Image 1 (cartoon, chains in turn cyan, green):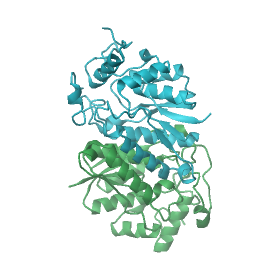
Image 2 (tube, rainbow over the protein chains, first blue to last red; image 1 turned 90 degrees about the vertical axis):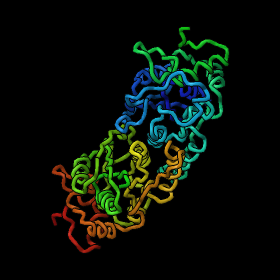
Image 3 (cartoon, chains in turn orange, red; image 1 turned 180 degrees about the vertical axis):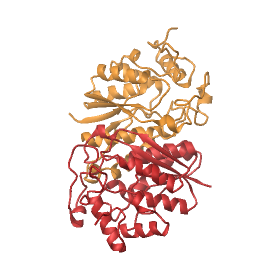
Image 4 (cartoon, chains in turn red, green; image 1 turned 90 degrees about the horizontal axis):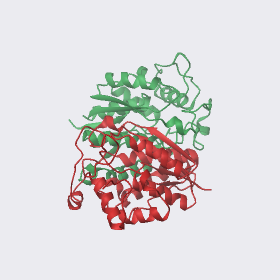
Length: 226
Length: 226
């Protein structure tokens, strides 16, 4: 079995991405980050999802991005609520964490090289991508090129591939794909600003995009209490 | 004053790189990593060097690369000793840490973006580079390209530059440059495998390259007891 490293936040996208990697026959090594995020439940969810989706191993790496500041996901800055889809499409939101995917992919590359795994999966999405620069295809292509120059294995002739199976899918298409692979979305979370009891706020960009996706598929989100 | 982030290991190269950035008029933010390295004195040296070379701020970020294994700098693997310069030029040594410079530059990029600093200095060196793939110019160019696609500031039209002032210098040229900028090399360390009292082993690749550099300049290394 070929090994792959899968970036797993415990969200809808990365969980679907893990299911796709498994369906493609990879032995999956899931990687999550304790990066100083305000909502820590994604770390617990990632452990559970890794077990349920039969990842070969799961690792949590601590890396303190909160010490750099400048994001509503790590700082004491309000997460925007109730924005329209049009508003979400305008500019880069305050939930952007400086260079986050670059840090995460770099650490995935380090683990991949140590494991002799040449495939890395990341659930980035350029359609419903909420304006993050590090979720675009041209960025991923540039990272892959850099990764093959950066590494001992790359220099020795192996080739690292960054897989982005969700890149051109809508949220509804992602959910349909996941359901076809029997993903249990009640295990996932998406909210940027969960309530104290852990339930989603229902009004942040991430909750609204998730709701829209489930509505388009025509099924109820298992996390919804409506 | 323009801000710059300087990767600082406390070694001869990164310390010279910091002195060069200061001489170019940058306000310097030095960044070191607690990455599970076996010899921890570089963290103490970096604090002292940042003070002496008047960095505006110094940050240590914890990121556990040792959990990935596969390097003599983080694992319980013997550091090679007494290799000839020719042997050092053959292949990539066991002191290579998978994707280390990519992880370090990614974190420098995160801090730089948060600081609104668009200049990052790294003391990589392609001549006496001991075979590390992530010390080559083509790798740095690929990282810079990726960084400008990865970031909010990059998308908004700012341009991040990765400065590598030592890239084409010999160790002797680096030492001469540092001395012209009044760098006190007794503050630095280079050894991959220091003795219990912190003094250099004198036989690892890094010690041997340093010795060769000082010999070529024709002065005594302040760390040498010979």
